[in-house]
Image (cartoon, rainbow, N blue to C red; front, side):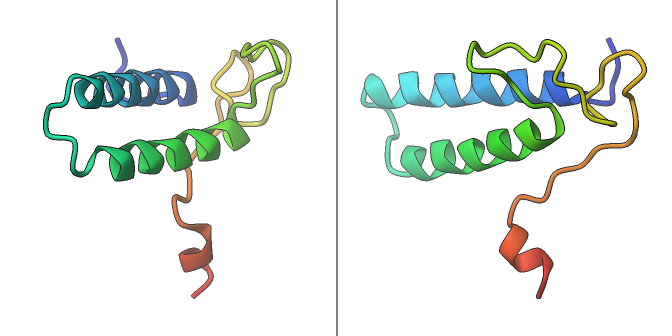
Length: 88
């Protein structure tokens, strides 16, 4: 396993974290900040989708970008979590 996350592995990890937080809140445990955390993870997921887009069926398929992480498309990738702050 690579120590450098790919867009796919980062997306999967964030989905797992978001799901775990929702389950945690569903059980009524420490729910104060969960909505904020889930929303923040949602922002990160949408940013990753700009690097590694998904089709309506949730699959990446042939929707390649220069840095989506697929074979032949392994350019450097990054996300900007707060695009409005990146320009200030």
